Image 1: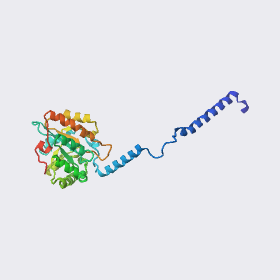
Image 2: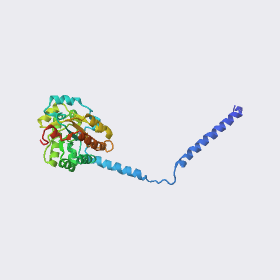
Image 3: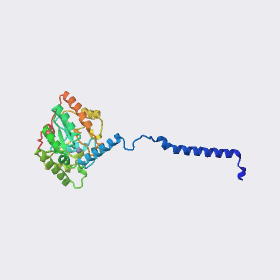
Image 4: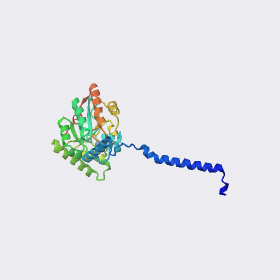
Length: 303
Ligand SMILES: [Zn+2]
């Protein structure tokens, strides 16, 4: 049977064997061709720099207390109508804006102090001599008292934004947890500036009737907002400027952030400080005056 293989078949098989062995040689030679003999064995300078930055980020994250309920982006609703309904129910406790009768607005900054972004925001406010209101997280107050001092000394108002930034309506401990969060924070703030703040803003703006009533009983004014810069969505400077200028009018309380969650690269809020410059100058050109929340709504800063 073997003898009966036709010559053209033998030629075909021989050609196939030659082809396969040529391919195998190519494969073997590939690594040698790709290797650059002079390439250093250590990581290039850029990689070393990146490694160093990464280490610095990790160190920073360890120093900055996290937002317990998660990032603003994970939890916050862009426009919680429920707070407008709550405001109608509790007009003496919950405030979402000031009066329409005066050309005054209040800039508010949540989640700080944050050594990355708070100084940037304070520098712009100082440049324009504009006061604002900072709703501080208690655990971060303890970590960065120097920044709290600077906020206070430069004429800004300070409010309570809980100790660990939980999503309060979801907390199993209910009002007990609210009371703990509020007290820990007011003590931390009082240790630095000498008084407990009266104004309270709930993390993510999340509230319900029970929480508002309890806050009222604790002698707090609950402060929401009616203009959301949406800076917590990690958007560009231009979009932040647009969101604020398109929605601000007399009496507006404007929500911005001078801090994010502890993730260094995930929550870059430097566009907030960049946006401030144009927001302030355009509103001032329209004859708008910037005041603190206590001034806007006529409720003292201290309890
Ligand atoms: Zn917050």
